[in-house]
Length: 314
Image (cartoon, helix red, strand yellow):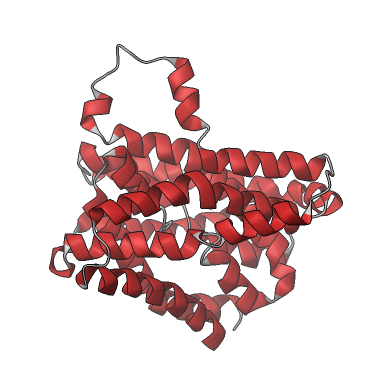
């Protein structure tokens, strides 16, 4: 339990460094935009490529992939509930896509992987990455598309829609890195050490730069402007109640081993994806709402993890 808390504290501490350095005038909005571009176009794609090529063997990947149905269906069901919830609670149109994405998608790598490892040990990594595959595929396809629709200037341009532009947006650099990693793994191509070192060095920038950007956004937003409104509460409800309950409920229909189920439940109940505020800024969505949702999900996780550890570990 202590190790899990320390993993969360490290991530929160990096966010705090970004906040302080912005207060000290080291960082500004221009730096935040630059960091966001580096993360989205360079470090995150390389990070995903390495995760896929180094965490699995081909045999392990193919054997584990039979368990992909439960997380895949659970994410789709949770997303469907997020659509209904947004309509019932009248989430504003200019933040609805961001709301649905935060409601549905977990922070499965930067927080999910270290927390699962701390709680269950190294044997949890393949199962955690299985959930990550489904979560990441949703986030960088449907999630990004929904967030882009929050930009009303883009949403109004319906007559100029083209499939080529849609697929260029769909195949983001991060998703391409993910897909190249899978292809590399399945083809059993050799992984030259210089490529590993290069990808690892740049890929390791993902978490600190992401946290710096969030710290910059929080400072420029102002802590006093972080709002706990009904929509942020809805995000927390989706992340910590509805999403894990859907996984648990579906396990009675889609049977998986007990240990795999515990890892899936823990992965489904993680904070909001830390890339959401960056992407909200990039696509012209409501970044203040995204920042509030992310920040409150991280703060509340200090209590949520206690409940999860009690239920899953005892």
